[in-house]
Length: 98
Image 1 (cartoon, helix red, strand yellow):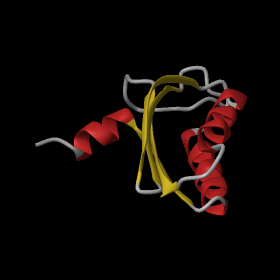
Image 2 (cartoon, rainbow, N blue to C red; image 1 turned 30 degrees about the horizontal axis):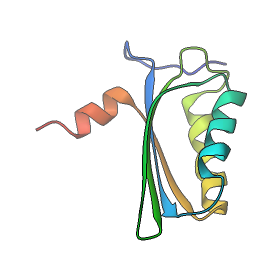
Image 3 (cartoon, rainbow, N blue to C red; image 1 turned 180 degrees about the vertical axis):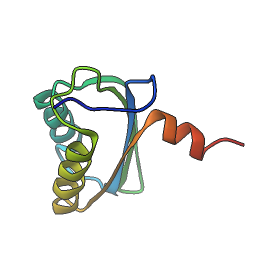
Protein backbone atom coordinates (compact mmCIF):
# COMPACT_ATOMS: atom_id res chain seq x y z
CA UNK A 1 0.00 0.00 0.00
CA UNK A 2 1.52 3.34 -0.96
CA UNK A 3 1.12 6.66 0.81
CA UNK A 4 -2.14 8.17 -0.27
CA UNK A 5 -2.80 11.88 -0.13
CA UNK A 6 -5.85 13.81 -1.19
CA UNK A 7 -3.67 16.61 -2.49
CA UNK A 8 -1.39 16.85 -5.51
CA UNK A 9 1.83 17.01 -3.53
CA UNK A 10 3.83 13.89 -2.73
CA UNK A 11 5.89 15.65 -0.08
CA UNK A 12 5.77 15.08 3.66
CA UNK A 13 7.40 17.14 6.44
CA UNK A 14 9.09 15.22 9.26
CA UNK A 15 10.32 17.04 12.38
CA UNK A 16 12.29 15.62 15.30
CA UNK A 17 13.16 17.16 18.66
CA UNK A 18 15.04 15.59 21.56
CA UNK A 19 18.31 15.17 23.42
CA UNK A 20 21.22 14.79 21.04
CA UNK A 21 22.48 11.23 20.61
CA UNK A 22 24.48 9.22 18.13
CA UNK A 23 22.58 7.81 15.16
CA UNK A 24 19.37 9.86 14.98
CA UNK A 25 19.75 10.71 11.29
CA UNK A 26 20.99 7.20 10.48
CA UNK A 27 17.95 5.68 12.23
CA UNK A 28 15.47 7.94 10.43
CA UNK A 29 16.98 7.69 6.96
CA UNK A 30 17.23 3.93 7.37
CA UNK A 31 13.51 3.66 8.12
CA UNK A 32 12.68 5.91 5.17
CA UNK A 33 14.88 3.89 2.78
CA UNK A 34 13.15 0.67 3.91
CA UNK A 35 9.87 2.23 2.71
CA UNK A 36 11.26 3.66 -0.56
CA UNK A 37 10.90 7.24 0.66
CA UNK A 38 13.38 9.75 -0.78
CA UNK A 39 14.87 12.60 1.28
CA UNK A 40 14.57 15.88 -0.64
CA UNK A 41 15.88 18.35 1.93
CA UNK A 42 17.14 18.27 5.49
CA UNK A 43 18.07 20.86 8.08
CA UNK A 44 19.33 19.91 11.50
CA UNK A 45 21.05 21.63 14.36
CA UNK A 46 22.07 20.96 17.92
CA UNK A 47 21.32 23.70 20.42
CA UNK A 48 22.72 23.26 23.94
CA UNK A 49 22.49 19.48 23.66
CA UNK A 50 19.07 19.37 21.99
CA UNK A 51 18.78 17.91 18.50
CA UNK A 52 16.29 19.58 16.14
CA UNK A 53 15.59 18.59 12.57
CA UNK A 54 13.14 19.27 9.78
CA UNK A 55 13.12 17.02 6.73
CA UNK A 56 11.15 17.12 3.49
CA UNK A 57 10.63 13.74 1.86
CA UNK A 58 9.05 12.46 -1.35
CA UNK A 59 6.52 9.68 -0.64
CA UNK A 60 5.44 9.03 -4.24
CA UNK A 61 7.13 5.60 -4.25
CA UNK A 62 6.43 4.72 -0.60
CA UNK A 63 5.53 1.18 0.39
CA UNK A 64 3.80 2.37 3.59
CA UNK A 65 0.73 4.49 4.30
CA UNK A 66 1.17 7.88 5.97
CA UNK A 67 -0.52 6.45 9.09
CA UNK A 68 1.84 3.45 9.18
CA UNK A 69 4.88 5.67 8.70
CA UNK A 70 3.76 8.11 11.40
CA UNK A 71 2.99 5.38 13.93
CA UNK A 72 6.32 3.62 13.39
CA UNK A 73 8.43 6.77 13.56
CA UNK A 74 6.61 8.10 16.63
CA UNK A 75 6.85 4.75 18.46
CA UNK A 76 10.53 4.21 17.67
CA UNK A 77 11.31 7.88 18.28
CA UNK A 78 9.65 7.76 21.72
CA UNK A 79 11.81 4.75 22.58
CA UNK A 80 14.82 6.96 21.82
CA UNK A 81 13.42 9.92 23.78
CA UNK A 82 12.54 11.85 20.61
CA UNK A 83 9.38 13.71 19.65
CA UNK A 84 8.62 12.92 16.00
CA UNK A 85 5.99 14.72 13.93
CA UNK A 86 4.96 13.62 10.41
CA UNK A 87 2.55 15.64 8.30
CA UNK A 88 1.66 16.12 4.67
CA UNK A 89 3.15 19.26 3.12
CA UNK A 90 -0.28 20.74 2.40
CA UNK A 91 -1.28 20.45 6.07
CA UNK A 92 2.00 22.07 7.08
CA UNK A 93 1.40 24.99 4.68
CA UNK A 94 -2.19 25.41 5.84
CA UNK A 95 -1.21 25.47 9.51
CA UNK A 96 1.53 28.05 8.94
CA UNK A 97 -0.29 30.53 6.71
CA UNK A 98 -0.40 34.13 7.81
